[in-house]
Amino acid sequence: MITKHLLLSLFVCALISLPMIVSAAGDQPEVGTIAPDFQLTTNEGNQASLGDYRGKWLVLYFYPKDFTSGCTLEAHNFQRDVAKYAQTNAVILGVSVDAVELHKSFCAKEGLNFKLLSDPDAKTSAAYGSVMEYNGTKLSTRNTFIIDPAGKIAKVFVGVKPGGHSEEVLNALVALQTSSKPSL
Image (cartoon, rainbow, N blue to C red; front, side):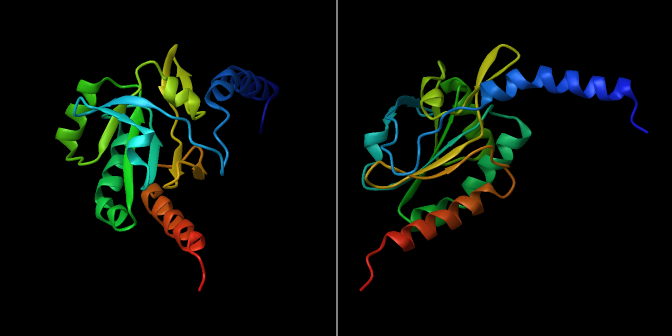
């Protein structure tokens, strides 16, 4: 039986959680709009920008933290499917607020062969509506964007679950490519 005390506790918990949810919610760029440009440092110490990937499909995924269980699972699944992405002329880039050195260690330990981008001030994460605050620290929110070869947002995934996400993105990518081919 639900008591008044339990209901009041649930209400208070919901109110406390609301600022976290609100700060995690953002205005993601809409499908069909030009993707926000970025200039970030890779795990290899090189600079990467959106323009570097013009002419290719880009999977730009944002995630909270290296070496955490969900983020490691998501990265492993993208790594598992790297060859499938290459077959679709797509590149995978992961983005978090973690430092370059942490990305480098994460890639080495987890055997990741795609680039991770360091967004230490969370400006790129914010431009993609993918930033949240957790215990007073800004983190990237788990969102993914498929960007077409012309640099436009083709698909947006918000609040993704890491487990089956790579397959979900691959299926969407194939569907987008199939629908964008001119019919004969």
